[in-house]
Length: 584
Image (cartoon, rainbow, N blue to C red; front, top):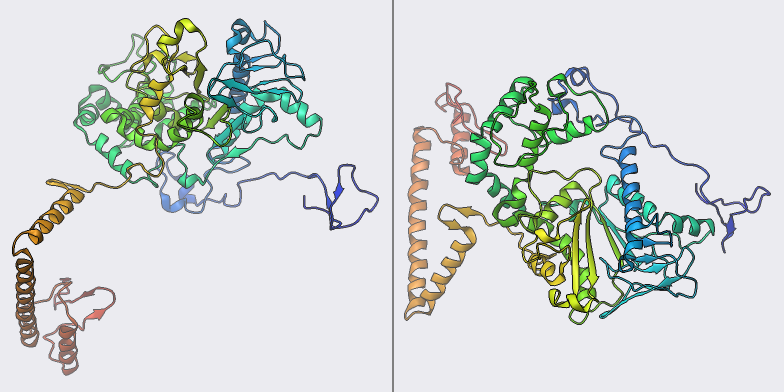
C-alpha cells in the first residue's frame, strides 16, 4: 500500500517508521490478485473454430487464457521441481556436519563448497575447492570465509553467502525464468534466508540481473542479430535436412497421419508445446494421440522404419513429438554448430567472464572479486544450443531438454601434485547435465576422467564468446556471389583504373559519354510519349505516366475528345482505364 500521510493517529503499527518529512513508511497490508479477464470475450465464430486452426481475425482482442494464470507462467509442478533442484545442489556442495544428509559433500572434503560448520571466528577444517565460481564457506550466522586460490580471492568474506559477489543471479525478464531461479535459490539458501529474515535483516535481498526481453541473449535472438535467420534457413535448405524431411519413410508417415487427423499440411513448431503441456498437466489427450507409454523414447536420425509394436500401438504421440524435436533442433548442430555458436556467443561471454578471473587472473584481472556461484535461469532453448556449441558428441539434437533441466559447470583448482600433469593450466572443469557427467564427451578431454583441463573449455568457447563484435550482418548472397563481395570487386577495379596511367582521363570520358547518352535517350522517349498522347495512340501502363501526359489528358477530357477514356484518378499510383475497363 502507499505510505500513510498522516501523523501518529493512535493506530500506528509497530513496524511503521516516520521519515524526515513526517510520512509514515509501513509494510504493505494488502496484496493484489491479478486476473486476466479484461479481454475474456470471444466471438461466436472464435468459439466455434477448430482448436487447432483458430482464425486470427477472431482473436485480436481476446486473451490467450482467462483467470489468474499468466500465459507461460511457472506452474506448481515446476515450482516443486526447481525447489528440489536447489535442495539437490545444497546436498551436493554444502556441509553442515551431518555425514548422512550431506553424503556427497561429506565423502570428499574438497567438494565442500560451503562448509557450514565454520564458527564465527572463521575457522574451518577443510581446504576450499574452486567452483563455477568457487564457493564460499559460511555458517548459518554471519560468518563467511573467503575462498582463496593460487590466483587470488574469490568472493567477499564480509558479505552473506547469498549476496554479491558470492552469488550472481542472472535471468531474462520472463515470469517463469525469474521464478524458477528464485525458487531454486530458496531451496539452496533456505535456512540462511529464513534466519536472516527472522532477524529483520535489511540485507536479505538477492540481486537479480536481467535486461529488456526483446534484446536479451539467454535464447537465440535473431531480432538483434539478423544473420541468425540466414543461418537457420541455410540449415533447413540443406540437402541433409531436405533428404530427411522429404524422403524419410518415418517422416512421410507422421505427416500423413497429421494431415488426416488434424487437417494440417505442415506440422507447426508449437506442436511440441501443445503435446507436452497437455500430458504433463494430466489433461485428456485426443484419442488419436492418446497412446503414450514412454516406451518409444527419442530416436536417432538413422531410425527410418515403422515403429508400430506387436500390440498395434503406433506410438503416434511420441512419433509426432520426435519429428517436432528433430525439426526444431536440426539447425543447432548443422555446419559445426554455426547457428548455435553465433546465437549463444553473448551468453558464453557472460559465463566465461566469471571463469577467466579465476583461472587466469593475470591476463584477466577483475576490479571486483569474481562470483563464487553464478546462476543463469533460462529456457530449454537456452540449454540445448549451449550444449550444441560444446561439440557433436556432448548432446544429440534428437533429444529435448526436460522441464527443470540443469547444466552445471564446476571449476576446480588442482591441488594434487600427482595429477597436475593432466591439468597444465592448474585448473579443471567438470560438465554435468541433469546428473550425467559429460566432460569426457568433449574433444580433447580424457575418456576415463570426469575432470578436464579448464583451458580446453576456454579454447572451445572463446572464439565465439562475443557481444557486439560478433558478425550479425546479412550476407545477401546471389548465384554469383555475395553483395559485399561484388562491391569490393567493383571498388578494387575502380581504384586500379584511377591509379593506372591516363586512368583519370578515362574516368572523365566515361562520365561525359554516359551523361550525353542519358540526355539523348531521355529526349527521344519524352517526344515519343508526347506524340502518342496527342494522337491518342496506345495505352500507358503504371509507372509510365508523367505529369506532362496527365496535363494532355486533362485537356482532352475537358474538350470531350478523350477517345472514350475516363479521366485518370490520381492517388499514390495512377491507373488508366480503357473503354473496356481493363486495368493496365
